[in-house]
Image 1 (cartoon, rainbow, N blue to C red):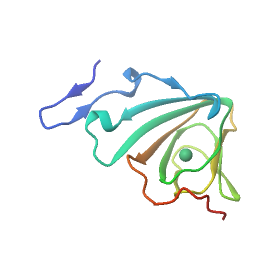
Image 2 (cartoon, rainbow, N blue to C red):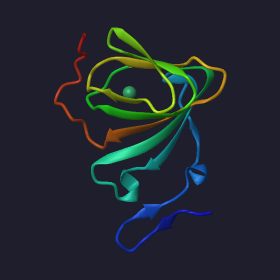
Image 3 (tube, rainbow, N blue to C red):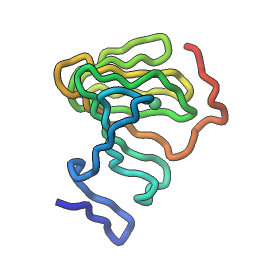
Image 4 (spheres, rainbow, N blue to C red):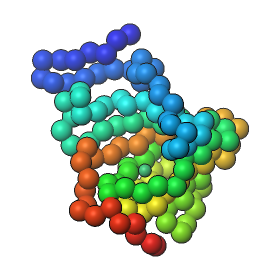
Length: 132
Ligand code: MN
């Protein structure tokens, strides 16, 4: 199994052969990410990441001037977006707007896995946090 890169710029691969990187402690606990598609692959507009949060793990509150588009694959989690907390499980999709504070918890006893797409460049001018 390997990653195939074709003559038109395409990239085809299986997630298991992408290196799993631990998210730094200041960003979260028991959390790992695989960058499936990124700018270095030739992507022009957005990147695709696969996150795994182990049971008890957490991604710390943060905000940034770009959005997230998330699809939950496995596990049970909660995501806080602004002042609200949402419980999610496989099949749920989530849009997180730019500059809204968000954080994630694995609330189950197995891995919480989700895809998270981000634009390669900020999508708004300011990084001022929006209260909502
Ligand atoms: Mn984020």
